[in-house]
Length: 391
Ligand SMILES: Cc1cc2nc3c(=O)[nH]c(=O)nc-3n(C[C@H](O)[C@H](O)[C@H](O)COP(=O)(O)OP(=O)(O)OC[C@H]3O[C@@H](n4cnc5c(N)ncnc54)[C@H](O)[C@@H]3O)c2cc1C
Image (cartoon, rainbow, N blue to C red; front, side):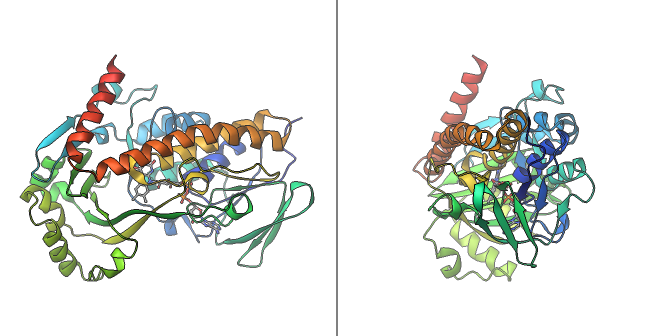
């Protein structure tokens, strides 16, 4: 006996929630999908994501969407350059020709987050997402059931609630006393719209993928997106309140750019061009994380996937990949176990292992990015990784 007759709710329509919804729907389930945003247009869409073979791509294969992804992704986005503040190059990698449009997948090709979301939305049955449903709390009932209470007054009683509601999950407190805490890194996101058309020299310097300049405990991390935009994350090792106390008025782009240029005064002109040419939205971002190796005691009828389970900083590019892998692992367990609680337990045990490893790697990377001679160290690390892959 499988679990089709059980009522399953998914809270959150990010990469994790959508992937799980698709996998369950494909197997004949009808999960209730609740999302606080009013529509897909309102969701914060963000930048480009590189989906890795053994995580994000594996999940898309389970969801029957790998081919759609391969048709939409950008293999040229895999290119990477690492420099110090004088633009000395410590590592440079062109997009791998071997993976270009390979039907088997592979590599870490890029896809804009908005494109990935729309690929997942379109794969779901019509009208299956309940928009404008902000979960306020999940109240435990008997036999592992929960009552979901929403801000708009709606309630629902379910056999399993899956929290895919991100960094500040409303459901996490049912399972864990841990909260998302400030990681020690703050970012200011800049955007250069129509980059190749307007600033061909900068576009050529950047290359078709990512450019990471690391020095003086600061970063300029730039990524070409599919819409000819370069999205830039200026990273700072800083106290939690720095984004509020640094004197920047984020609504005044010209003065923000002047101040930022002064913070990067002795960096090379090519690198300062990322600030000088910024012509799009400017967004301050505090980076939060859960403790490395976050886990909890299993409780019937409730579990966490994605950032709700293992929020980590973006320094291994793992978050969306892991959210989707969690969805695939949990989905497969639900489909193949006859007992829902055993399925959840099996998923959690497996997920704690792989997520713990990636959280530790992410933490090591974050320390590296803000250490002395960071560019040199990252260059050596990348060469070792690529060398290892070639063996
Ligand atoms: C600057 C930056 C760069 C990043 N770059 C990368 C990268 O290159 N590669 C990568 O893999 N990851 C990256 N990430 C991480 C990635 O964005 C997240 O890990 C990923 O989005 C997590 O997916 P999720 O589905 O768990 O949660 P989310 O994407 O956060 O989705 C949660 C959803 O739940 C909804 N929600 C929240 N609360 C409620 C509620 N109470 N009721 C109903 N709905 C609710 C939200 O509206 C949202 O739609 C980056 C993150 C940052 C901050």
